[in-house]
Image 1 (cartoon, rainbow, N blue to C red):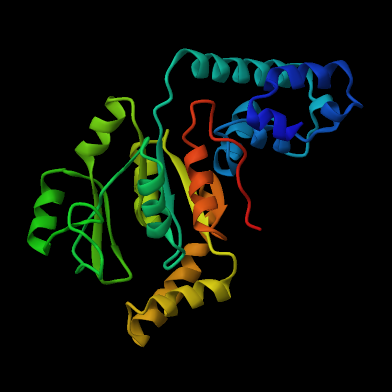
Image 2 (cartoon, rainbow, N blue to C red; image 1 turned 90 degrees about the vertical axis):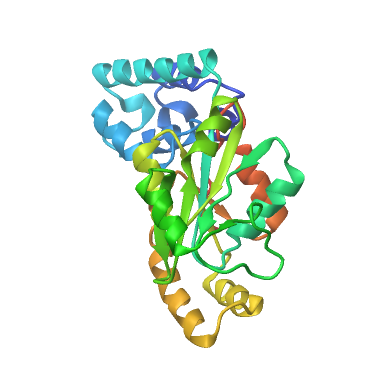
Length: 280
């Protein structure tokens, strides 16, 4: 039933009606948390806010909701379904995660295999790595130019990453693409994702997870772009970054680049982002 709600095969309101007609049914015994997490575009971060707004305990089951709780929940879902039907959902999806998890690789796969998705190009003060192209992979700028972009309000977000280089997202290309009805993918660090959430609350935040800590270390060492001191610093940062996963709407595990890319692209579909992904 949760899968059917997430896929749009049944409406959330119809499940509520079943639950209230038969409290001991499968629908009636479903916890409110599982139910809401199955509704497109609701992740764990939004879940807490919604339950507080509806004044519903996370321990409640659908069949056990009180009369006023039922009214508030039904009205909330009706409003969401109405908005979904009547407006085109141009999506900004923010992909973030710890160092060496493969954010850039997944974003590059999407660029190459999903032309319907517009990829934002970030600006950075670091030097290009082998194979990176200015204006495609990043806009490579010096500190003076980066300072100018900040001063003139040209960046949607910016941050210093690993206590070394600065990264930022040019604002206007994002605004223009969304205005044209395009779906936009923004691949940035966790600090930047938090800034985007603050200024564009409708953005969908996706956390890219490694299959395991050992695999993350292997990937960082294997790419050979940092010296031993830099690797150690990045791994310490990665531990802190992994702890931020619960701030995100969805979690995608990067077992396979193509599969991870497909999951991210699925979040941009007009029908809604689908079921939140949990770490496996």
